[in-house]
Length: 242
Ligand SMILES: [Zn+2]
Image (cartoon, rainbow, N blue to C red; front, side, top):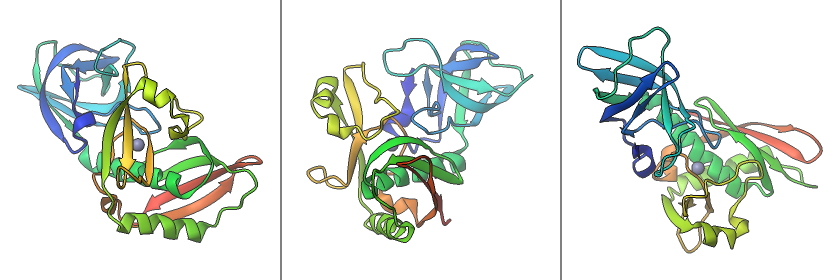
């Protein structure tokens, strides 16, 4: 299984061969579909082949162990004929939805850079996204956070994945901002997402999600609300203006 979204988040479609297929999911030899994980929803889209097509209503990680990373299950619409193994399909994601996820996801990295404290949870959505922070003893200013976020957007900083070894990550625990989500280790290397200059990053942390290539692509961000979720927990909800 070749995970095209990992190297090229902008890949909208690809030709692929069906490896296995059933109502619980279709496996392909390569895919641009991102499986739900790390707070980012799975992609939706369509598989087309000579004489047929099936809508993909979700993408999830399967239970199989595959060397390259997660086993990706393309969840088909109910009661639709499925392409049998060996079929060559064109696999195309719903790009408008995914691109919003990429912009939102990258905006949440910037939010991490702006707000102090550990991240205790989060969810990317096409309309709204949120991060929960453990911020002992501090109050958060909505306008100030929004202004700082948009300054980082306007800076049009590069967003570049790089890889380090599991051992190097273990030696730098400060890189892990999330308490609830363990970074995808175990394969020998960990994918880090770096925003800004590599020697003085704005944000640097393990992440397997999909992001835009430059922060300017996010466009203006609104801080929709800041909620108290427990004594120290603050939930920050952001939205895109366009
Ligand atoms: Zn990310």
